[in-house]
Every structure is written in structure tokens, then in C-alpha cells.
Length: 385
Image (cartoon, rainbow, N blue to C red; front, side):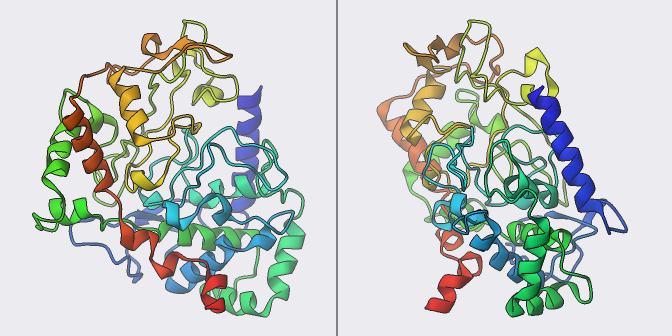
């Protein structure tokens, strides 16, 4: 029932968002004059035809992203769970909403979210940022920002604020301030969160052989090897196999069961976190989640869809064991024996040096210019400074 309920909610949200649009989410290459500031080797992301990028829209979206008045308590914003210093994730295992309700999942990174072919951990139907951001704003299962039923109040708040009136006019011209334009602005800001300037990028694509250590180079070779299999699910420019961009031959979409749980020896996951099974209701989809980007992975602990692994070292141990064994408690079970587990999670052995090499490679994916970019920071703080 929960899966069908979610489908109904998403359908309603998508319908609401489409009101007033002359075209619904047909996509085109990013041919606008917006400067993505991409390195030459990087393909531009794809942008919905009905929401072209502009600097004014991105700046408005930045203000709205950090706007705490868009929560029921006035104390939460999108940035509460998506902290720039953590590559737009947070340190909690799972996010806690404005009313104190726990979300079942860990906050995903927004780095390069414009390149994601599907959004969130486990929803094959969610592909548009303009729609997705309405879920934390208005969703009730769980409550995140808690603004369900307050659409009129939101629009009034924005219309009554002289700064927002100016910014909406700059971004949308004569188009009225609405939930629709607000969502399009936040989505544009989120698409602008580009991260392709890590030491690894400077080494692999920038020709700087000294940008990463010899240990990281050895770690890269391990990462790309059939021995570890990491690259199958974390490959390509965004280290994820759910990626799309303007030069893609096709849209990659994949979900995987990594053997994190096996509650009944038949592959069961905790009832509140069954992966895309929640949507499809197919038994074979139990425990299948999207492989997130590994960019800035050293900053995004804790890990996995439920934040149940605390460190990168423990993540490597999980995959080396071919799945996690929990010896006691409500989640006890041998994940390595999960019959629905991906064939890529078969386990491997690493020496201590190889493990350190792999860690060095993963840490080389940290883009300091991204997490310190003032264009992505809280504008309220900018004004105070």
C-alpha cells in the first residue's frame, strides 16, 4: 500500500507542478548562454526545455535553498540536510525533519545532481528536480519541511518580500510568483552544483601527474579492476551508473542490492527501507538502491542508503566481505548470503597497503573548490560578512 500511496503522491505533485506550463518536461541540450564553468573534458548536463538556466534564476534558487521560512517551524531549509561543507549531505545517519520525524534514509549528495538520470536512493520514477524538491517541502510520510497545505502562505511570503519580488522579476520577468516558479528556481540552483575539480580530475583529465599521490594511482587501478568490481556501479564521469548528460548515447539507470541486510535468509531488508521494491512491488527488487556518486565521498559519511556504515574503511570491509553480517538484534542476518545480492558484490582480499591505496584514491575525489565555492553558500551569511 505504501508504494501505491507514494505513486499517488508523486503523480499529484507532478500534476501540480505542470499547471501553467506550455510544455511538460521535454528535454534538450543545455544550449542556453548560462556559463556552467565546466572543464573542457566535461559534457554539459541536460536541462528541461521548460526551465532553461540563467544566472538570475540560479541566484534566486540559492536564496530559496537556504530560506528557513519555507519550513513549518521557520528553522529548517533545504540546506539543513544538504550542507555545502559536506558536499551537500549531512552527518546524521538519517535526516530528521522539521517536526522531529526521522526519514528512513541518509541525505544524498547534491554534487553534480544535474547528471543524475534518476533522483533519490530508490525511485525509478523520479527524474526531475522540479518535481523531486516538492517531496521534502510538502511530503507528509515522513514530514521533512512540513509545508503541506501552506502553498498560499508560501506564495504570499515571497510576494510580500521586496527582495524576492525583485529576484523573481529578474529570473522570470512578468511570470507570477508561484510554487511553480519557486520550484524551477531551486532546481536551477541545484543543477548549478557542479564538482569536477578534484585532485583526481586534475590528474586524470588535466594532465597534472603530480596532482595525486602514487598510492592514489595504485588505488585507482584497484578501483578499476575486475578484482574489486567497483567501477561497474561507480563508473563514468560521475562515478555512478545512473548518469545522463548531453553526450550520452542512452540514459543509464541501475539499482543494486549490496548485501547490506538479509533478515530472513531470503533477502529481506528492513520494512521501512526495501529499495525500489517499495515502488515496483517486485520481489526481485528487494534491497535494490541507486549507486550514489563517489565524488567528495570522503566528506559524506555516514554511508549507504540508511547511513548504517560510519567510515570509508568500514565500507571497504563490507564489500571485501561480499556483504555485511549482523550477528544479533532485529536486523541480524548474513548479507553476504543474500540471494538477491548483485553479482558484483562477491568479495575480495586486500593487503593493508592496498586498502590504504584504495582509500587514497577515494580521498583524491574531494573537490575543495566545490565545498568552498561562495556561489553555492548561504546568502544570509554572505550579507552578515
